[in-house]
Amino acid sequence: MPIDRPKPKTGADKARLVKRRKPRRRAKAALSRPVRVRRAPDTAALKHHDTSFRLLFDSNPVPMIVCAQDTERIVAINDAAVAHYGYSRDDFEKLRISDIQAFEQLPPWHGDHSADERAARTWKHVRADGSLIDVAIYARLLTFDDRAAVLLALMDITERKRAEARLAFLAQHDALTGLPNRPLLHQRLDGLLAQTRRGGDKVAVLVLDLDNFKTINDTFGHAVGDRLLKAVARRLRSSLREEDAVARLGSDEFAVVQANVARPEDVALLARRLIETLGGPYMLDGHTIVSSASIGIAVAPGDGDDAEKLLKNADMALSRAKSEAPGTFSFFEAEMDAQAQARRRIETDLRAAIERDVLQPFYQPLIDLRGGRITGFETLVRWPDPVRGMIPPGEFIPVAEETGLIHAIGSLILRRACMDAAQWPDDVRVAVNLSPLQFRIGNLLAVVMDALKTSGLPARRLELEITETLLLDRSDHVLATLHALRALGVRISMDDFGTGYSSLSYLRSFPFDKIKIDQSFVRDLGSNHDAQAIVRSIISLGVGLGITITAEGVETEAELNCLRAEGCHEGQGYLFSRARPQAEIMQLLQAQHKALIARVA
Ligand code: C2E
Ligand code: MG
Ligand code: MG
Image (cartoon, rainbow, N blue to C red):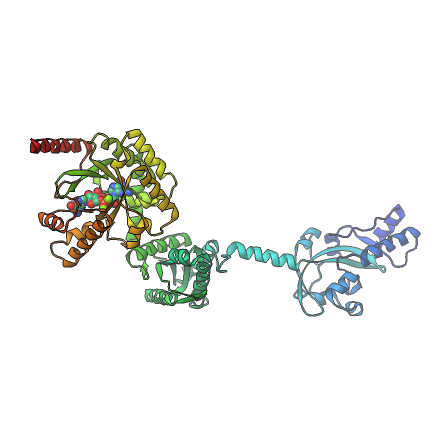
């Protein structure tokens, strides 16, 4: 808030003012609108001005001082300045302006700056008790006791500065752990890379992720999850050298930047140490929690020479570590990048294939092992490609799940399967695989109802196959959708049983109509007694619970005989037939129909 000068009223006053004012040249350029104040006024008008200035000065809530322009001595102080700075009036008047400046020697009116530029600057002042304050200064030149002087209004902006610093900190740091966030890490990493480019040293980026964070969060609640993240941040910070950086990238993902790496072994050593440090138990809210971390590593300059590329490559290495051996570390390899590019190519081609409606359902028969009759068909999606031939679902379903294309594929195959099955005899069912991701979007029930309605297929002839991973979370939403589907009359099967967690509690959480024993157990039936014991237990479990048991991947007569002997209800596999297109299915069903009629006759 600049102080307004009292305006001279008469031309004579103005003339006198101009004549008496002799500011130094530099100050003259910098300070605008000089104000004249005299202690011994020679006219009544001036006396009035002096008095009002004095009043304005003395009672102003803003700390103000007047300094002699030549000696820089403080010659007048208002009450607010005395109160704010803590010096007595006498002490104040013995000081020069530079005595209350913490670092600067030159007075605020020094230099060729505009009044606004001066006010935008921050000065550090020392108070009587030694504390430092941030001050913005508004200066005006005036005449005081017939001498050139400067009036300074001193605005304490310490609090505002502190708030600004806090805001700047928050914009670059993670609120939970106080660690730098991704943008700040990017900035620091790029700075470090620019330095090392000259020196020739290596820089390693380690991206870390907790292996079981979601489960801990779900089991113990978010408060414990938050505490765990804070504890992880503390452990990371204390395991690193001063020159290394650490940041939180998001959720349970952290990054460490190791500077001055001389040998790759140094990075491996650090990764091992971090895994060990983070793997120790945490005592949180009376719970002992054990968590492990996986790490992906990229080293500059070989794996990239900017922050973005290094983080991306370290992320790729992390995915490899997590999928192949959680709780370990993995270095980035160029071949991972090639894999990622191949996935991107699949994504582009898959989008085009969906658009051109190229994907086709094939059907593989399910055989009743007692009577040999076809009870139904499992729908398996096929992608015919002019160059690559028939692309198997194992290659594109994971990409479809990652990219969300699974929703389009899922609905499309379901609709086609229901339409085709509506052409089959009334006692033949159709099974369709569902990805857990299809349950995440709320419209699965509507998609199923729509497919049944347009095809006219009775709900009892549709079987939906889900895998154990869907029940991992056992969320209310998933269970509610499954119950709603079953209420329509649709049957629900547990696919690939034995490959996931195979928790018996899954079987209790939902009344499945069918369990499909994974083909890996069937494959070992002839040679492996354990596999036999497992298959036998699953079958007796199914019999006990009144659930149909189907064996997948039956390839040999020996496997078939073994399954029959154990009392398995249904079989599916190359021994009976591979998956075939709809045209062949119609022929197969007609042949079965004829054979049945011949047997009856
Ligand atoms: P799945 O549901 O367990 O399907 C059985 C897989 O085993 C099929 O592989 C089938 O061709 C194969 N198979 C059947 N009999 C034998 C045999 O005797 N020996 C051997 N070695 N394999 C046999 P496919 O068609 O490659 O499908 C692989 C997986 O892809 C399926 O496993 C299923 O999880 C998924 N999938 C297929 N179609 C769809 C779909 O439309 N939607 C979704 N979400 N997933 C699908
Ligand atoms: Mg299946
Ligand atoms: Mg299966």
